[in-house]
Length: 132
Image (cartoon, helix red, strand yellow):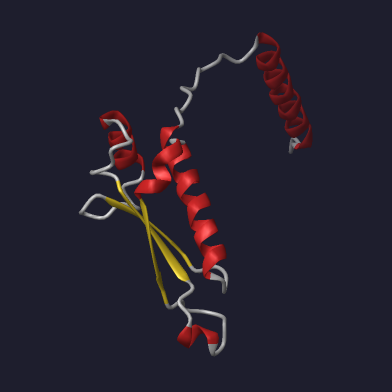
């Protein structure tokens, strides 16, 4: 995570839906975190392309990454959760995926599978009766 990325973040608060009783109607607890990916001075072009490709569902047509949180009744707590989610999203977008290396089944595992098949076959053969 880049250290000065917090300077490029913008927060908005609005009324939240859900629990809170009368508090819902008068206090803005829902927090939206906005990050302008296209105009970020701290990210390289490669990092921007990674973010656009991996987080396209979170980015609008103007190139702004948006994280919305309304989990608690506290605006401060929702802001903290939004920051954690944002940092987690960036961390997952920058993570390299390991390529899977195909392996062969061992000789012992093949023999074990075939012997089990043969044993099962013998059991089923023993169930049949010859009608004369």
